[in-house]
Image (cartoon, rainbow, N blue to C red):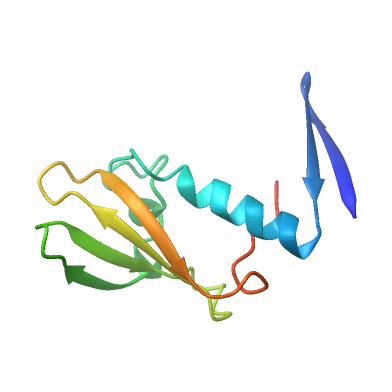
Length: 106
């Protein structure tokens, strides 16, 4: 099922199928790359610190942060790689299947 949302002069078509929600999930989390983890306006890591459930030092010297929103404990795990010196998100990955790792928006 697809729905169209009008916002100002922009129109967004949202695909509510499982594959569409999974693609939206990947796009939304990819937008965190390049952001400072200290910027609470845009960084989910800063805005929702209670959703950070673990940190791991990587061999590269970077930090991997496991992030799971409190309201979203459905089997999908998200990990952000953070440059320890600049505190910028430089990558991300997830563990979980297409049905668990979804985004419903806008």
